[in-house]
Amino acid sequence: GAVVSQHPSRVICKSGTSVKIECRSLDFQATTMFWYRQFPKQSLMLMATSNEGSKATYEQGVEKDKFLINHASLTLSTLTVTSAHPEDSSFYICSARDQNRDYHGYTFGSGTRLTVV
Amino acid sequence: DAKTTQPNSMESNEEEPVHLPCNHSTISGTDYIHWYRQLPSQGPEYVIHGLTSNVNNRMASLAIAEDRKSSTLILHRATLRDAAVYYCILRRGSSNTGKLIFGQGTTLQVKP
Image (cartoon, rainbow over all chains, first blue to last red; front, top):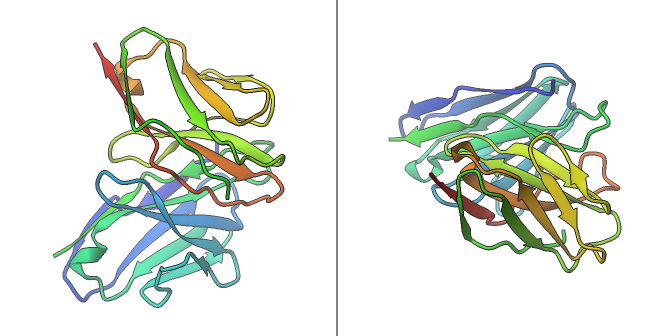
């Protein structure tokens, strides 16, 4: 149980365009999901906390107008990278926790490799 | 959030036990100790967690010091598939959806 699906796994886009990444909890409901980005050979950096039915909470230094987060249902959160530039190329990962299980572990998606050309 | 300190890298031989240390001297009473691992080009995977007592599961064991200022993840018999970056993270237990803040982790190399 506790599966998180992330789509797409890889995407290449042109500079200036927008890209949407989906994160779905397949067998549980998640009122909260988390978005991370990871550059090569670095650790995961938390970008924002996605809250179902309300605004996301962004970490310091993360531009909320550039990284739009929508959490419209209990099983889906989306991250849209707007006006993407080559420096946005990174590995984006989402995670969620099944609060109804007596289990503290978080489940992560398999990640989305974004390349902006 | 309380910080953790881990060695940058460790090496192990296949089929031998591995002890991955983590220091967390500023841990608070409600912080749970979590371990995750990340294989190349994948999202992190939950390994184990604990609060005060040692814990065992099918993947690993977690040994927690009596003062809780350090812990050790134990892989009983390392395999080549255990080569990954291992992250030790503290999560505030009072928060039902507390965020996980990743440090640099330990890159484990397993030699055949």
